[in-house]
Every structure is written in C-alpha cells, then in structure tokens.
Image 1 (cartoon, rainbow, N blue to C red):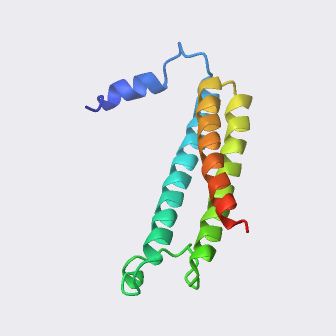
Image 2: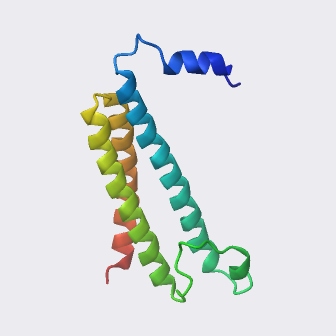
Image 3: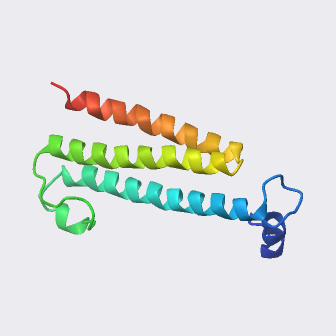
Length: 130
C-alpha cells in the first residue's frame, strides 16, 4: 500500500537523515536515471529475444534504438553485450557519484547492480568467443 503524499514528502525532507538535502537530490537524480536505463536495457534485451524468432513477429515489436538490420543471432548477442557493457559502465559511475556525496547505501546498491551486470556481460562475452 502506498504512503500518503504528505508522509512521503516529510520523509524526503526529513532533517534527521545524515545526508544533506542537496546531496539527497543528487542521489535521487542518479537513481532515477539508472532506473530509466534499467528499463531501457530490459526492453532492448526483450526485443533481441523476440527478434530471433519468426519473421512475422518482427514488425510487431520494434524499438527505435535497437539495430534493425541484424539477421544473425550472434550479432544480436553482440548488440546486447554492447548495451549491457554501457549499462555496467554507467552503474560504476553511479557508485562514484553516490559515494562522493556520502550515500554509502546507494553506492552499495549500485555495486550490487554492477556485479550482477558484469556477471551477465561475462556470460555473453564468453558465448561470443571462439
């Protein structure tokens, strides 16, 4: 169940938190950007999976940022690996950004995201090796 908006605002602006309000705003921006990046990566990975199936399925599930000229399944793996690599690099930057403002918990959250993404990137890159 969602908390009332006034309670959410009170928690957001609570002066008893050990992170200054300006730094909380910076952390909030970093979290929002990475949430958007996560959903973008998710939809692109779904597209890659969908596109390697039957030819009639392609026109129904196109996303503008994913390459539309790929016909080889290994090229799809390369495209997903490139996007996952960019996502991982972004998570590493977020670790530094949130650590710099003193938010160790959010930095730890991004560290776990980075570890998980690195694991899957390793699997994809291993799959691409001869």
